[in-house]
Image 1 (cartoon, rainbow, N blue to C red):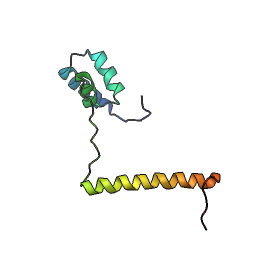
Image 2 (image 1 turned 30 degrees about the horizontal axis):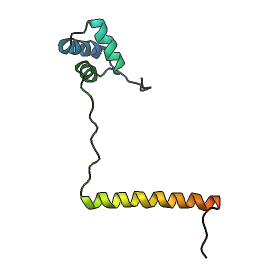
Image 3 (image 1 turned 135 degrees about the vertical axis):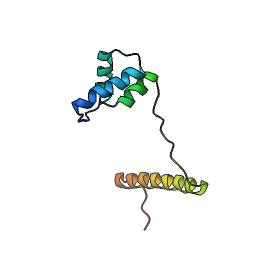
Image 4 (image 1 turned 120 degrees about the horizontal axis):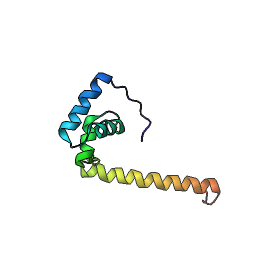
Length: 96
């Protein structure tokens, strides 16, 4: 579990448990446990019961040219990093 700290009003916990009970076939004890496991987020607890997974949005590319230049920059950065490492080790020839 994560080390997130969450503050929840105790008055709202009962309402959240009731929402979970209406949407699932959990008992009240299990609903309280699942609510605690999901940091008192009733929607997350219900999604876990239904088996709904979070979809990660793919990185959005505005155009083909942007993707081409992104890949070129990445390749050149890697090559420069490798060259700098070789220079530090004394493996690269220095041209004067």
